[in-house]
Image (cartoon, rainbow, N blue to C red):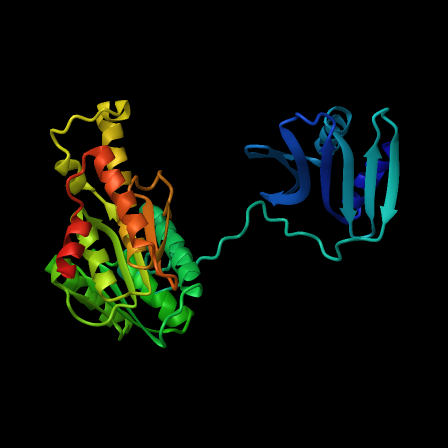
Length: 385
């Protein structure tokens, strides 16, 4: 065992250390399954990062080289039977049997290069130097991020990361027509156009739909200043918008049934992607007003609000599936930035849905929670008539 620690110290001293793993817990019932060691650089100081992999979560702690050796000795005495040291020179495997006897095996190196020393994975900033960031007040004229807009900048980049992943897995036409319903001041609309047109070099036409005329005029002025020829904004109610084929329908924080109106437009247009971040959810809650709820969770107002948000969005997802879409629901951005952080995505599916089974699920939800009407279901039924 002492020889193993000497190999560890030598690899660190000569900059040959790649990583180290601990495996085969002494006690099969132990919560700690593995420990992984690697070098990290934090504030210009080299440390050894320990990732403790438990059955339910991971925990990370950073140590100096001396502290790392001490922690490693403790873990090999108390918790693990196998340690594998990976260096650029060789791999060194330490095995400890049930009687405490240790043996070492040397094999040719697995790795020819060291691992990155950044403490965290370096995130790609998809909106970094774009001109619109200055015009919209996210960066100053020197290109520096304005502190109070840091959350918005983070939201923009997270949004583009999500869109990037969705577009890669979607079959789209040569020219992509995108409509953003409820575009507001246009932060995400500008970011989307700039990223797809200038970074991804896609042939896109993006239209922002916003009822407030002063915001529409403002956004069109910024689009002209940036030279964004295929980005425009229109002052119109979502339910009245009838123009153009929609390949990607986006509705972020469109209030209450405006989300349903947007989804409906996407369904009618047979959009390849429908991307929503629902907001408010008043309609279903109001439809059950006065109805006695037997579920004890619904006794408390805050739980009742959250429950009916979930019911509303689950029925929306089921209606998308009924219209031949694959659906997923996930967290858009962290709760610390906004509680309205759920994103619902529908992507056109090739397989025909089991309409009867989906209808049964919708009816079951409505009966369980006393919901008489879901607005999206109602307008879809009127279309069928």
